[in-house]
Each structure stands twice: as C-alpha cells, then as structure tokens.
Amino acid sequence: MAGRAKELVVISGKGGTGKTSIVASFAALAENVVLADCDVDAADLHLVLDPKTVRRESFSGGKRARIDPGRCTRCGRCEELCRFDAIGRDAPGVGSGEGAFRVDPVACEGCGVCAWFCPEDAIEFAPAVNGEWYVADTRHGPMVHARLGVAEENSGKLVSTVRTAAQAVAEQRGFDLVLIDGSPGIGCPVIASITGATLVLIVTEPTLSGLHDLGRVADVASHFGIPGRVCVNKWDLNPDVAAEIERQAELRGLAVAGRVRYDRAVTDAQVRRQAVVEYRDNGCAADIRAAWASIRHALDERSPS
Ligand code: SF4
Ligand code: SF4
Image: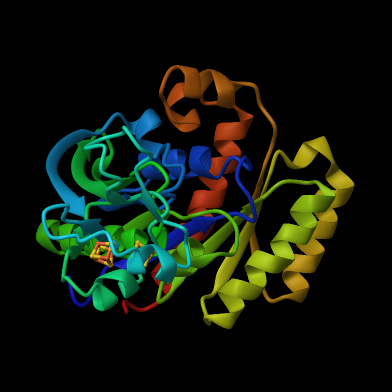
C-alpha cells in the first residue's frame, strides 16, 4: 500500500440519524478495512461489532493540578487565582480537620495558574488520564475505539489519537481504507474527525431540522475542502423533505450517494447486535448496499493521500 490509507468519515448534523447503523453495514460490506469509532463522546459502534480488545492504552488530553498537603501552608493564593472555582477548602472537621486546600479534578481546566503562583511549590501539575483507547478485532476487521472518562473533555484530541492509531493498523495490515464513524454536530470532535479525510458521507433524515443540519455540517466539510456525499436515511417518512434535502445538497456540490428507506428491521438488527445487511436481505439492506457501491466508486476515483 502506498501512502496513507484513504479515510471515509460518516457524519451527521446531530445524533440519532442512523449514522452508526449505516457505518456498521458498510463495515460488513467493505473488505480490507480498518474501523474507527471517532464518536468518542457517545461511542456505540462496539455494541454492534462486539470487539475483542487486543491492545489498551491510556489517553491523556491535558494536565490536572493536585495539592501536596505536606507542603501547602494554606495561604489561600491558589483559591483566589483559580478562575474555574476548582480549588476549595475542607470544612472544619472534614478530612484532616485542618481546612486543607483541595483541587476538584472535575472542575479543574488544567490551566496551570495555581501551580505557577504557589509560593511553596506545593501544587503538582501532571498529565491526567482522561480516558482509554483500544485496538480490537471484530468479525469485520480490526477496529480502533475509545472511551472518555466521566466529565472529561478534549475529545478532539482523543479523536485524533483514534485516527492516527487506525492509520497505523491499516499500514500494519496493508489495508487501504479506514472507515470512520465520526462525531455528530459541528464542534471540535467533528473537525478532528474530518480534517484531511478522503471523503465525507453526511447522513441526514427527512425533517426540517435535518435540512437545517445538513447546511451546517456541509459548510464545515466544505470549509476544510473535504469532498462530500449525502445519504437521506428513512427518506420515505417524508419524501418531499427528502427531495428538498437532495436538491439543497446538489446546489452545494454534494452528490447524493443514496436513499435508505425506513424499516423496523434496523431496530431488530440492533437488538441482535447485527448490521442490517447481516440481519435481513430486505429493501432497506438493498438501499444500503447501493449507497455503499456509490461510495466505494467515489473512493476508488480519489487518489491516496
Ligand atoms: S498557593 Fe500553595 S501554599 Fe498556598 S494554599 Fe495553595 S497550595 Fe497551599
Ligand atoms: S490548574 Fe487552573 S483550573 Fe486547575 S485548579 Fe489550578 S488554577 Fe484552577
């Protein structure tokens, strides 16, 4: 394989559009693909693909302050300086009973100001473990996914870590495609998901908010110069809005990769932890196969990065 593997990123304007369900079916249809779940704030691809972990790594997205009670003279300077109200003092009778200062690790934003100004050098400012990422085997190939700790942020950095690891796995295995379940919305995680990707597939649904979200997410992809395709999921729930979404997409230079009809089999497949194309060879599965054929053709036309 020459150069980096191509990257297809599947995104949506918001959660709940059926994006992950479509990614799971693409995973079943693609060959020689590395899967990457970059929806790190609400990862759920693993629920369908049942990964077996072969490597587990800690993720550090930043630093956290911690006060050494043995060195602290309780001057209170750090509490005054912290703009995030992350430093407080034990109430009388709590802990040592001496009113020790403590950092709330959830509120601490890792700015480092307290450590810099502490006159006693009593504040340790060290990398914090914010989550974990994993390399796993699934029935459809290797997968990289991650979990962010409770109330942890910096998911953009974790997304970049997952993408980098997925590229490394593709290189090891000689695979030429990474299929990414991207983050929904238009924030930092989605930007980290799509920057430098080969192709973006925007999954939307036929509602007015779907139409609005398409515009926002298409603007982000266009800003970063990533070519895009659009797929309207459950299109037959509102054919008029579906047609309008496709019209708006084409006005923005986004080709339509396909339409996927509504089918209760999608939920039934999820309950059985299967992709729709594995579960039942029905009309919905045929729609997804047709969309995948269109996407595969678009990927084949693009040269490796
Ligand atoms: S600035 Fe340093 S010495 Fe003063 S209360 Fe905070 S940790 Fe303790
Ligand atoms: S590192 Fe910044 S946010 Fe965290 S406790 Fe110190 S001053 Fe507050």
